[in-house]
Image: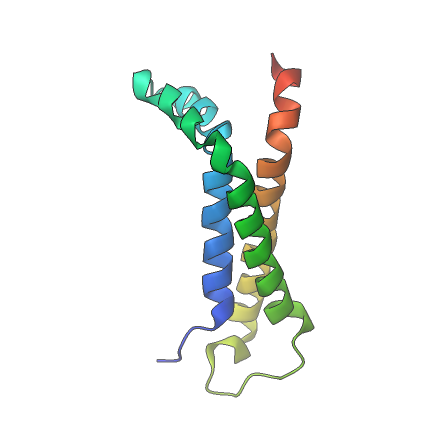
Length: 116
């Protein structure tokens, strides 16, 4: 089986960092919207001081993934996973999905007052 490329790890790291960055603000709202409640949801605001760190990590991971997906000049060997067009298209789709998630994580605290 072909070995996955570093783009997969970078995209996963970027997505995880974006989720962690939005967990202080967007997480409680999403959980309450889904019908989950409890006093423990209020403790998610303790992650707010770490938000800049998570956003920086997500931007770094997305930058690395973008470089590996779009700026890299070396073609894949035929036995590598990235040589398959469907896998390459899936990497691109996941990249833009994670980029949108990071954009939401950046803008949500500023747009939040518009909803109240």
